[in-house]
Length: 582
Image (cartoon, rainbow, N blue to C red; front, top):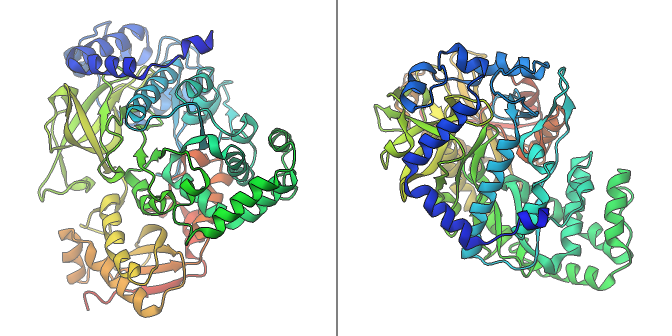
């Protein structure tokens, strides 16, 4: 029965999408009507005087814009066992946890079956367009995905990441089979207790099914890059396992994982081991390792926008000529849009909003200098509806979901790139609340990325690259200064690094920063060059706190409250101070 339910016809899915987006205004009105009618008895809505009304004007008049802090007390009651209709009429089935890498603190969010449905819808929609561009038949997906640790809240609800809630749903595996994305690895690997063991086994399972792999993917681009950086170190051990038909007793110790993967190994396969070894030996600096190992792979897929854009260059190196396809746009709170133009390079990817998965509003954002992302310099106008946005303008996304979030400010800044029929195509710009600031200066996540890219050109001339980076506004001394943390792929000489430091300082062009630097109100920028493997320690730190590997994003701006990460990034570094304004 499940197989029948999940039969897949890509052209039918595309036709449904075209119909859905033809009159997005009407679909949005109906979506809001459904959300409000279904949840009319919710305490939150009743307390605001919605009184059963379901039209957009009444809704906006009664319900204020909200942040997570506004809804946190209600969600806490649900987590603690309040089964009355607090945010939704039907009880919340589980709690989703945000990654915690953005703010250093994990947010609790309500999760229900409607979010599973919208996830399957967006997966199927994106896949239909991907499969039209890059047809895939009868194969598997090498997916570097990891179930996260879960716990039970005081009220008896399961709490884990949104992705794990989806992976554990009844619909996930049948849908993956239907859209030719059946994973190579057994469930025991996905839900294994140790990330490094699961990663090793994902690689091994991928090699065992090498000719069947059609898609290589992960939730985030970082996970694919990390997987093949790991492969560079362990490929000979993987070959030994395949050659002897025995799983490494030191690499994999978890009993359930060993049992599941050993069943796939079954018997020695020296021919495959020799083939993998020959391919690895023939590569130059691991360029094109993905198509070399998986000759029938059609593309590499994952979230590659926002803070993940930094990893695209390295991913392109590993992918050789294989297309990189940016995955869907969403968050722990819910989905926003699908990538219906998969042939577009990730750097230019846009996401078309599905008008029936939530009710969307957009806060127009304007800046005095035309910039896009400096939080305090934005002037906000009244929110507009999904179809009322203007091409070329910047907005903050506001969502009303089927899981009990009402007029919820997502904190994402997007730019409207165009329209698909009557629904907008969004380009992700940055998070609003990630910022370097000492006094009147305001530099965003995007400003930081552009500065790093600019300075990294100096490294490229030396055949060096930035593996990962972060930042911190150090106000422990007066005047305060920016600290940029870099991990490089190899040693660089001091003259080159001093030049990079100066270039980083010059690359922050925010008028408040430039003026403050010239007036000595902000001290010279500091570049700290970290030991290789430091960001792996940051990842391990977050995992030790219960953060999910599948949702991990290197923190781009670290606040003073995040002392654990600052301590890791401050150990055994080589420091340089800018002379750009001397």
